[in-house]
Image (cartoon, rainbow, N blue to C red; front, side):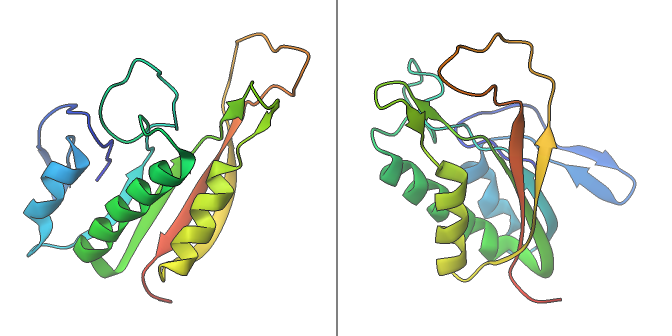
Length: 154
């Protein structure tokens, strides 16, 4: 399941023995209560990425609210994840030009997930081509974290 909270992307598609489901994460999670999923790969909207965004994860007024909403969403995912299921979360960090520094949102998120009982089985850095010019106050960020979580050791 690929999720993006607050966004409807498409429709259910069958391919042999698997399903790719697009849709609003909070709305569709309830359909899995009796049919657990094996894999969830998601890339939540970054914090305050689009200042015009009015609703959904990423539009919160504080980083704390943003992280709490993400944790609440992934607690719902935990309920529909099979015992040996896996959760992959792709996250980009933010930069606050007012303070001139990074926000460390992926790191805060990972620590909160551990506190909620998730196991972090790995973390990779995904390099992506980024053609935007960099300003001289910081490094060009052309990578994102991908965290691998599970609810059990197996």
